[in-house]
Image (cartoon, rainbow, N blue to C red; front, top):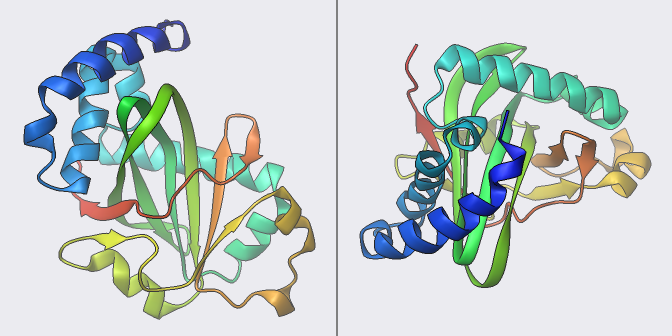
Length: 214
């Protein structure tokens, strides 16, 4: 596997050349731009692109999401506790973020209701400014009420930060939060291969429904 050893190729070739060449076409919308970033990265390095979920089948996305959720439960008992109360859980097992001045992130995931897949979604974001690097991480979003779930099926997608109240759960909060202090609509855990990690800028990301191949 050459996935981790070729990050520099992803940055110097894909982010620097492909992104600049296609900038005008990708700027039609934040969602399209960020998705284009993820797909350009995938073209430059197929293994990394597939790790972000680009081009995976519904079954593959579901399998990765289920495995990622189980790992999160192992590293964070609070996440497992929230799962018992949540109306649904949206899991993006791996989001690829890359940038060289202009950057973006993209990933695909699945919504679980009572442990059963209820829909597939993408998450995308664009970023600007001084940045050079690449990373991958995952999100698990716990929806605590029906009203917050309605935002997922908006025709134009849901821009995180508008609508329901959202709380990013870090390691400290995971230890101190109790059932009596749970008052927000959506709780977001950011995780990696090593477990729970600090939040990675989900605000402003756009979540849209997708229909992956079966």
